[in-house]
Length: 97
Image 1 (cartoon, helix red, strand yellow):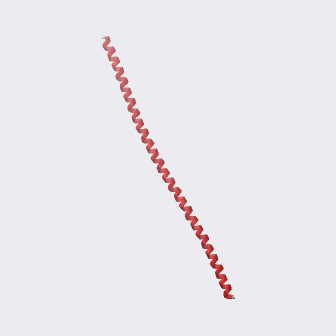
Image 2: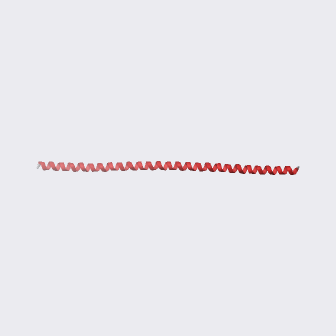
Image 3: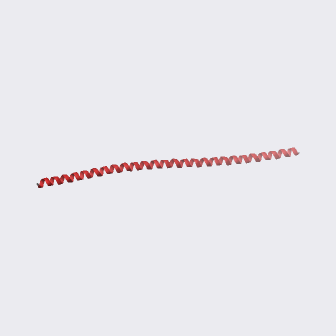
């Protein structure tokens, strides 16, 4: 009888240990899942940041090229304007002689 009680006690203890292990396993799995989600979110943020940096660099390069092109157009127009103005002044000076 005592041996049967002892076996029952051992069975109950084994069941308790298995339940505790199962709970610990689930907790460990949850920690791993939460950790992997955190790592995944961090990686996503890093990738997004890199993408935003690259996009910003591209936009800056486009605006710099556009600004250079606009400066070239303005200088060309100014040169044409002054050349035309000088040509007009030259013609009037020649006509007045």
